[in-house]
Length: 272
Image (cartoon, rainbow, N blue to C red; front, side):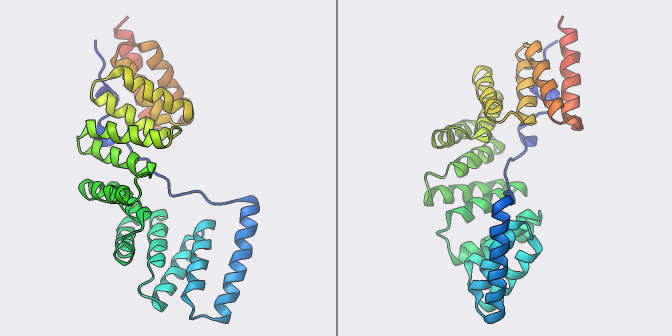
């Protein structure tokens, strides 16, 4: 009995688009943030009509994880200065944290309209559009980001992922390789590269990329699960079972990981 990657529930369309909304600061950074909050609040009390102080407080709230507070300050900035691109950028980031993607898209589009030279906003907009399955628009935004910032490795990585979702696997490989050239320790780029190679039937390079991903990020359960599927599809069931078990150990409550392990064990038993 042959095992196919799709037997484990994997298709390119269900590969999660990996992106981070950022981590909150802690320890000494939190102390610095609280000092900044006090300072900017005092500045606002002294001069409530200065948009700069509101946008600064919004940024600090965003860093500390006070998303609703950040939104309030960015909105206050816009009331005072309707053309403040930084405030719309902040709103976009805040809405991303809240997973309110329609509002994030609207805010980022306004920020870009006010300042089209901000490469990071094109990148952020592309990420959100991908989450909304607006892949063609996402690709265009990633490309605009790269035009403005050719060395933006995250944009190359995410463009590759979007191209892969569009079925352009060879172009995906090119973009992931470029991302890795710019940032050799980007585990996500290695993951995307591995999935693209697997879809192209290049098992050897798929395994190499996925093993590199797990070496860089030993807690990436998706990478272990996909690597297990590639091993199983190539007939290497011992390594497939080991990788699938590792994925389950990392996330014991993940039903997809459990199912992949069960299917690989069943296929291994039938191939004895």
